Image 1 (tube, rainbow, N blue to C red):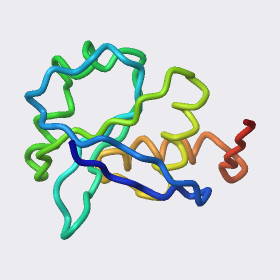
Image 2 (image 1 turned 90 degrees about the vertical axis):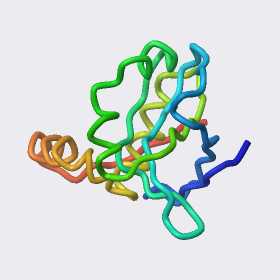
Image 3 (image 1 turned 30 degrees about the horizontal axis):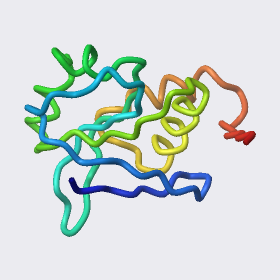
Image 4 (image 1 turned 90 degrees about the horizontal axis):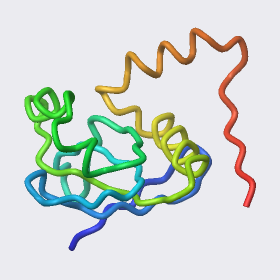
Length: 122
């Protein structure tokens, strides 16, 4: 199994396993992204989180659009804690700016009067 490592806006590194979309996914809680090959790495097109990867990916409404943009794989970062998944998603969304998350990121920015601050407590 291959892996991808992305640096978030915080500077932290986040490790993802790389999967073909037709694989059977576990019911694990995870941050996931639809990605395409980009040189020697991966270009995330859509990034999100879920409490059950198997159910969420079974019929994901964003996958067809991601495929049109060149997505060939699903990258997965498993984490049981919801707060940690939210942190990883926010950290990477701000750093990587996946094209399919653009409207979501803009809506979040408009709702907040101050810049987004990531806080992590171990």
